[in-house]
Length: 377
Image (cartoon, rainbow, N blue to C red):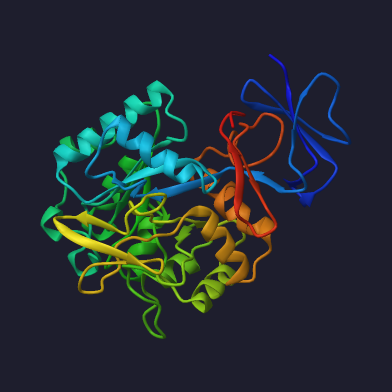
């Protein structure tokens, strides 16, 4: 197969963005990153001076392209959602099911299994956000769906055998032995919509919970005498934090403080995206209620945040412009660090030989101009 050479761009390397590098791709993987021009015989992709970064990886995608995963737990639903986010540089995702009935959860798992088997581009696994959550921190989730699962149910939700399973839960609803057992089966546990205090969440981190789904949102806050769930995550050097950088979910100053508090690499961008992302409509229905997205903010009629209208390229721009981080770090927060969280960092999230050729090209205004999954444009 003829090699493809990506040239004339600013390539994100381990040292930052570098010019005068050629990225050589064969059979869907990067085989070399070379100084100077492309080798003879390669098919050339001229990046025209644009930034070339690893494709973005989003671990929290509820919908896109006017499709909500809960309403369309099918292969075609997944295909539509992935295609909608592709234009914003997301080349891999964890489609996310908001708290629902067990039957819907099982249909969603089956759809993800089949989508991966069919090679639907960009689907890495499934993220089940609930229904094992705390009513006191329910957010937009329907508390009538909440319950504590038995062993048989946990076996069924951990049954995806060809992709990753991420489970957002309130750890106070589980004993430590159950958390350890789920983690031992490969389920990526994340705390969210939780009323856990500092001590309970630190104990959960010691027993298999990897971090928090959306730092600051739907969790106990940081206080002077009670550090809460936020304090537990910021204080634990190994805990991962997903953050929604849209100017609505979290104040910019709070995000800057969190980034300063955590070891580098432990904060990753997520979108919490809803159907309007990449779609034609600003409204969607969740649990029978119409949600509206106006000026980048998705809410119920009563004003409760209902996911976001954020795309990953927008999250990267906001991280640079609102939080003041360098572009290379914002891109790593959108690609390298999510890959590490998912345990896929040997194959995704970097532009190095041996890694998948999942790539995104950004212009000087940080808008997506091209993307590739496995080298395919």
